[in-house]
Length: 241
Image (tube, rainbow, N blue to C red; front, side, top):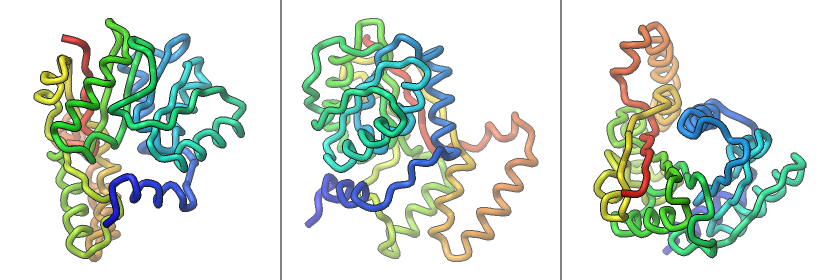
């Protein structure tokens, strides 16, 4: 039986698209807003995957540490940094046990990671993220949002038809309880990326038309009305208690 690590090793061993996309831009802008700039700050991406967002931050003056338990993912990211003539530190490790000193980073973050863990594992991962983050630093985690209907619908259909590629994935409604048990305080939680969630409708029969029309409908709404629809990623911004 495949483990979650086996699944990701398989995904990262396939042809990976490193071009910048709309979701990467959403995450990048979110991190820019929350950190007020990247220059002369140390960032740890705990569960780094492709590393392309961290690469973009490196070009803006950030010092980057990438941690992932997939050797293939780290090799991909290392090649990407090398081709872009950017420096980074690449660490093969589980994010629940990172071989880093206490209070290393100004910001520790990840996107699309904690939803693959049980509650107790989420607590342990957050404890470790807290340990490697400076006392006044910030921890940011972005995870698929349990309140986002297009994502939930597409995921459900994909699971029912055996087409879901990402293994165990538990959408997150809030990290407040896990954060509290890890000694962290959630400063704010909000969602981003509603349009990105519509990509999951492609798992639904006839989903291409549904995605197209829903996108058009959404863009015709006012900014205030758009806020009524939860986005794909739940952003949790945390600091030490």
